[in-house]
Image 1 (tube, one colour):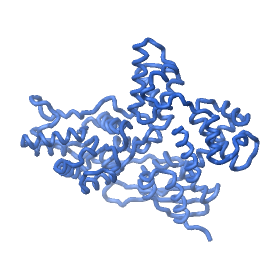
Image 2 (tube, helix red, strand yellow):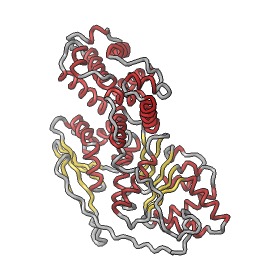
Image 3 (cartoon, one colour):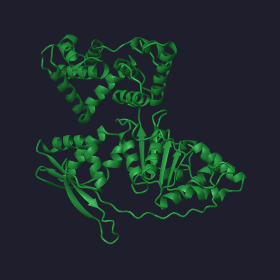
Image 4 (cartoon, one colour):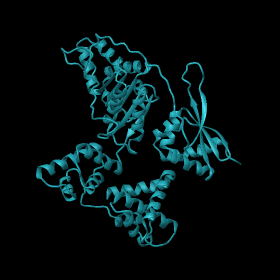
Length: 476
């Protein structure tokens, strides 16, 4: 009995759900519905052209593999896109587009909402004695998208931020909540959005404020009997960027005033951007009605950057500061400091300072010596021998068999994972890795790495194997 389009799509969703973060799945895949299945062509309906473009840019590989897994090598995916005419008279219509084909430009029109500002409103950011309502957005001009390195750790948040910057208040990402641990770039990304808006739409009233400063301003307005001016000022903004909203915890009156400001801005089509150290569902000490507002838009997390992203961050900083460092030093620092971006950049500054003060060239030996306060267990280097031993112990296969010519499935799997991890965790070239694992050439290593990456994307059990081994490497 042939499967229906819904059954095929549900099977695809099961694989996709196992391979992407839960928030990403809810945002980009739950709104999709299956329309029809004709032969080997599955048609799905997405809510907008933006959805189509996002899926094609970020998930086309995963979609292609899952569809082919369900329908065979001839399986294809097509989109049915709901397009709003934005005319106010006609109802939405749909248009079809093939996967990985030529897309069409989305043409949208929006009427700006005029904002009149009472010139007598007291600006809580001004210094007493200066002219009123000279709105400085309080943004750091160094925080831009250009110097915010993109990686798997922040791709969703950065892309959503860029969409908000292009159309503040006009996307479904309102509010945009950016959350993550210390030093992962929440403030940088939030202010980059503000700077991009001011660069392209200078008439927009943008304000960046930390939660602590907002709370203090509220207390001052109560003391000075200027609470109406305080509220009117924030309600007059087009974009509010509120940093560290977790600091609202326990401040009931401040939460109440921000709740009303938030409602006014949201209902007026204004943009709200928030940052926090936790996801909305994990924030404690905040009123439920305020938390529910935080969940209205998109919550995007920032994770610890991977090795490639850390290297790119260091190279970007070196370029900005006009300095050069040996590649092995950059890779050493990036490989060993993996807590957060702030610590990574701090280590680089420390290294440069030591070099300048001691008038020594920066080489690998100096890097190891100077960064002992940042790096733990620097003496223990990961080698291909160690990786091979760890993988063989994990899968319970003989070490010597990995280098042999056998094509047994369990041996091939151990060999390919060992090659993949050797490429990721050592500085060895593809040629050196191939030679180590039984005299194979570099093309064999490339094929092994690609095979492992494909299986990580589509096979949940295999992905768990690789993650377990990587954790053991990290603890060694």
